[in-house]
Image 1 (tube, rainbow, N blue to C red):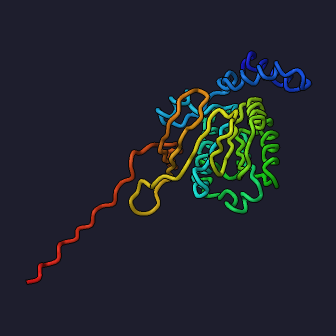
Image 2 (cartoon, rainbow, N blue to C red):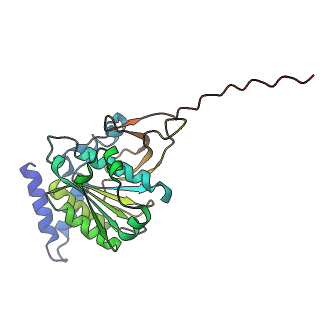
Image 3 (cartoon, rainbow, N blue to C red):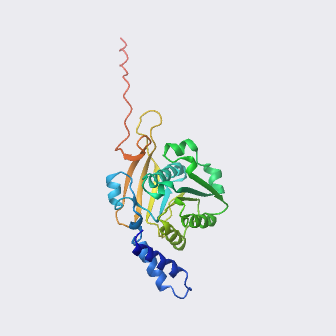
Length: 271
């Protein structure tokens, strides 16, 4: 990290520690952070899909918070898989220190009861070794936010995934998480059970649902429809993405392959 970025982070933390009456410096520092001035210092997490990466200015910004919401409750597995793929991509560059840093998954007890714990073979399918993932169970959504903030502040953590159900996040909460992520360039992912229209300091907001398999019969590679509904860099859009486990990257396909027609000869006419 260059000295100018480090100085910006120090000034931002110092402003946050000042009395409540002196808010001008804090507001100015937050606006600078939300404008993406600090994100470029930590690089990007590219999807490997040219059109999508171009819309994001090179990829998903490190040192920032990103929101992922399921289209509906039944699409939570699709949104989860999308988040896991991003966690893998964030540490896939071996030259990056994040490759050796842990991935923290924080969820409410109720969420784990309803959806279960991450499954080892499923993690492997997304390129994420199970031993690199640390799971944390908490009682309430406010505990998820607290644990996320503490984890994002740790230099030993590369990605933090926080899963909340039903809770509405205010702007202050997402600003705190954004500031925490900027400290060491961690990737913060907020996983939601449904879209939230509230204002947010997140760099991007995604709505993710399951997409039809590319195979006509039987299960194919995981596919999701990802809609980018908030992007501080400006461009929005939607993409159908397929996770390629062999090449460990996202690819795109236009439409599912239709089933082969079955030849059914006409029945002989009855005299």
